[in-house]
Image 1 (cartoon, rainbow, N blue to C red):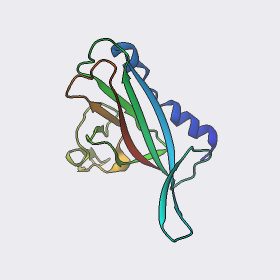
Image 2: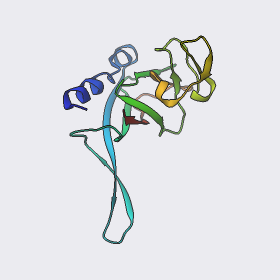
Image 3: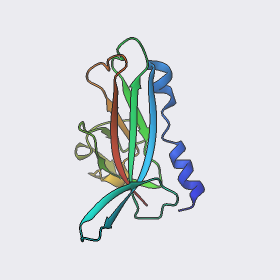
Image 4: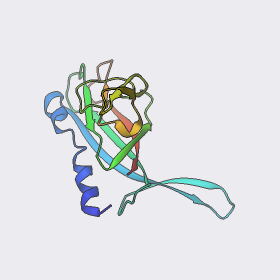
Length: 156
């Protein structure tokens, strides 16, 4: 994949509306997951800043949030489009995100969703079908509180 395309899908992750509406600042980072072996033969997983990505590279998306308001942020929701060049590979956060496989019209856990086939039949949704990811906070985010959400993807 070309570097320009990589930066385009990084730009698609910026949830600017969430900051304006709720005073919750979001900072997005993307890392390439590399597995190396040290001198002793032990495998280590490293997260590196992506310079160039190629099909098959495993990515880790990290969303740091901070409530910049003096008030709790209630009913806060973060929605991210899944970059078209990346296949969803699961969540790395304690709370599983909801996903959409229809461009954000319907939401659910991946294992509960289905996709309509060209012939009108339905099949179980797969990670490659995910178009959007959403976290809906069940509790208010206290003033000044911070946190981190993660999800994984594989470059197509």
